[in-house]
Image (cartoon, rainbow, N blue to C red; front, side):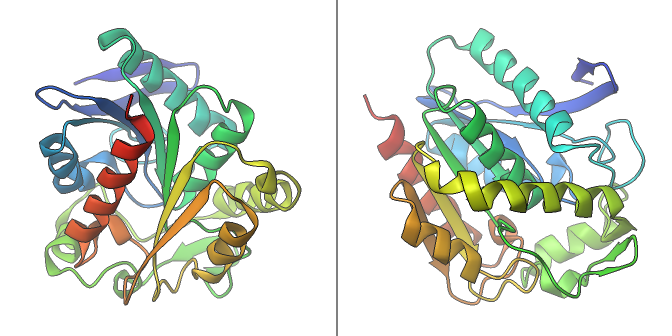
Length: 256
């Protein structure tokens, strides 16, 4: 299995190569997910000439760690750095785009703020950019699958995939989100990397309102809303339209 070496342990990654790519995306998933849930999205990108690289974050998928424990924003960022270096070595000079979903989007925004010259553009989905309510009971996170998607294929994948989960200790996640929200209040308006946010209007986990407010403040942050879409917008019933929006943005951002 393809594994990354990290001081905290080995991490599993996947690479979906396009036949003749003109861009590559480095992707970070969200809580309870793993890279195997994104085959359908990867194939849509590949058909459009875009490579996809993704890593199972700590505590998820086939990577070491306690279930649901991302460790920290910095640890997730380090995994993305290693994957980025792999992508750069395989195809030097290929334009790179940083992408993340849910907690992965939080890490991606921090990375774009920390190193704005590393990626040509950014893509975020289901981004929790403001405090969440009603999702945790003490240290426990327990998500209703119906909050995530209305797509029966994806819901079946969640139910029958032993690597996917909707409940776990969420204390680390909560702590890291609190850190990010404090930073975003002061730093996110200074974002300079062209970034697309794709978000469902019916997302009950990370309501779209906070993303709308930031998009109104930040010139380089575009928001594409999908009516009725829930949290896992990349795996929603309208996943083809979402992928098409991402492809259009990546093409425009990496042209030339």
